[in-house]
Length: 141
Image (cartoon, rainbow, N blue to C red; front, top):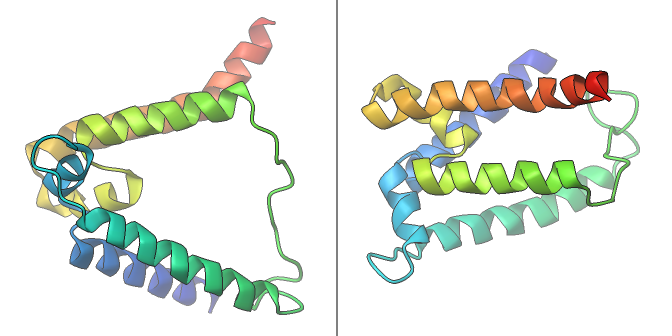
């Protein structure tokens, strides 16, 4: 049952990305082009997501426990460190250069466009490096 609900949530999320145009890198790049062909519609998509998340978290965290687990698994760390800043910076640069972030990239993958075929391997390499980098660096210290 947990897998079915996970699949349905992913399907709803992916459908929302496609309907909102987030899987089109030109829409994202136009949003970032403040002095050219600026398209503010992405701000409305993000604003809508923030509002839904705000109320959704209040409803869910008001429950005594999650539906499919004994306890809530919330992040414990609240500090801002070099790894967080580096990861956020790389994410932003990749988003700005490619016009994709990971969710929309997955929804655009079946299109097999040149942009996604270049972006997706870079995404996988970046995910691998993000996981292996701290291990590699700590082994060298």
